[in-house]
Length: 293
Image (cartoon, rainbow, N blue to C red; front, top):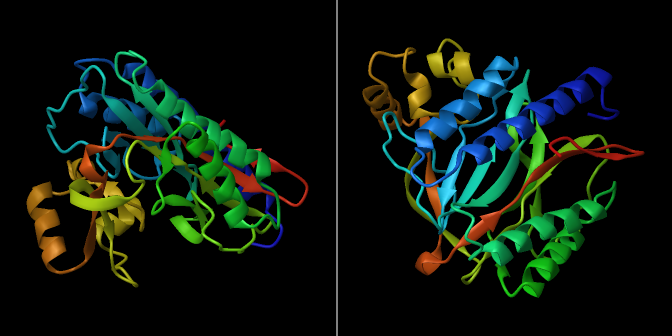
């Protein structure tokens, strides 16, 4: 896009408003003994009730899990006192999305408050730098400085990204440290910045499947039920209930034919804890609007 169309801007702003409120609802439900499935269902229902759709399944990633876990069908998992929970979610209107995240310590004991503050303040500091033609490594450098000042490490192989229509992780990558990349932010684009702070070495690896999938074909069949309902956005196994007779068998068949990608849970090494915060913003020629704040 060259100059952002007023209607496109409106959709980004509305998706941001709805995503922000959904995140607040989810965070308020997280307490010892609460079920992950109940939190995810409530957040996704709110988005639909507001006239939008989920941009991706609610991610509820605990302790050393950084991302990509969503509850399975009939998931019995519950939150435990002391858990560090990353809640990552977004809404979309006509494909124009928000992506936002918060970290909650279950039971609010304060054991991990410094870690949580490090990620939160790194995001705030990064947002202050955002403007057209700002190089992404400058943003990454600031994120790393703030996280390091708290005594933690930024996760180096995760970062922010462009947000385009039906493309959640578009083109530009915004690192959480100075990676030397002098690519510059362009006006009239949406981006998401998401610092991850770690008590460990600041690197993640792929773990077990997290119940999140996405069409993995350059030209998907437009009559395919997944494409008709979710386009090429990520979806949860449980979202297929009522759409197909047996979701697990359906996914197994689609995976075997290499039509789906399964997102692995992303994990920090050696059980280290991770905190995350994220906002979406639209970068215009004359202003930067944080849509999810």
